Image (cartoon, rainbow, N blue to C red; front, side, top):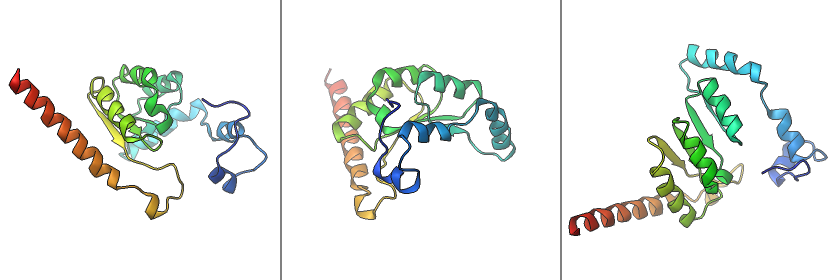
Length: 162
């Protein structure tokens, strides 16, 4: 959620007007709706996939209206299960960032998403831009992989024992 007086993150202050609020900064970055057909045509002409990040369900409906190929949810949305459920109802491939999530939240997100989507991906990311290599935390990918495999094996064993 963004309020009109929300402060900017430190990294945003480095490259934008310090006096403007985060809301004012983000409003300037919004694309006018009449650009969407032009973007669609350009992407199709150049064999590119359309991807965008909705912050509300109404935003997501615009992506459907203009035939975007993917939805990408920001990490703050990764724990907003009602919003994720709404997105899943649109039946569009979805990528969910996990930069602000801990491992238990990623686990819950994975299992919740698996029950809703036929096509989804979790994106390991960071919220530090630019990211120093020592903060990239790539080891979390192995931890997630091991956890997911262990749970899958446990589920198979339980089914066999039934």
